[in-house]
Length: 364
Image (cartoon, rainbow, N blue to C red; front, top):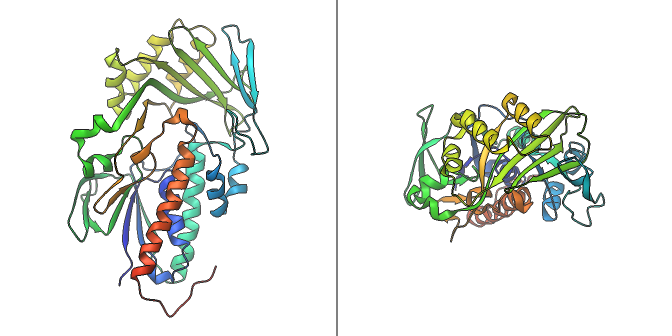
């Protein structure tokens, strides 16, 4: 039996982790899956919002051989300080550096983009090793996305939008995030509103030059009318990251509408947040100014994804695409890593029970 072909949509956290574990299987190189990773962005960026790795997620990065690499790339956040309009600290919670007790600041705090970059390079290294031993490894396709997907009993047939390339795979994995296009194509866009559970929080993320008041502590300011600004350290010591958000019970339709515009709506998104925070006090004027100057601004609603099942035929959803817990859960990255590990294990078990033993044995 020929090795299965797998398309993984998304080169963030879950996608490369899944691909790496699949190729680290004890199967002979020629029996390993033929993997394609499709990423809509033309390149990876080491920036992005701050994320953390907790509990079982630490076990997974250890299995990937990345624990020390990731820990050496953390933001160095010392903890969280709740501050008032005059920047006075009225509550502070230190990070637990032992990894035994979880606080608001994990012992592994890292920029999402930097983590994705590390996982991507690990998958490249493993792929190269597999190719040297006669396997197919991983094909990476950047700057494209799916605009068509249908399946039959044998294959999933897809089309890449920009290249107009039509391909068929044994399995398609949607690891393309909260607003997963794969989910819409496979499960139907008409039920998307039922899957997305908005939590009423709409936020912008961006980075800015580090100011005099910024330190290795996360500062969290809450303004009246359910507005908040969070300023955090970055892996780059001259940069801080910002989360600026407002909680609304969907009565302002504009908050939803500008989010649907995606990257094309950046100007409208910045203008709307500026309107909300003009009179918020604290350092809001400086932060709004830096928001307009930021080239890595990202706006989205904070939401969960809840589904009765995560697979349909030969399409399976992974991490945020199928079971997003939302950024405020503090577990999204860990869920992505654990999900990739478990899915790889399930697929490997299926493959090894349907593939005749190979006369060669792989060793690592």
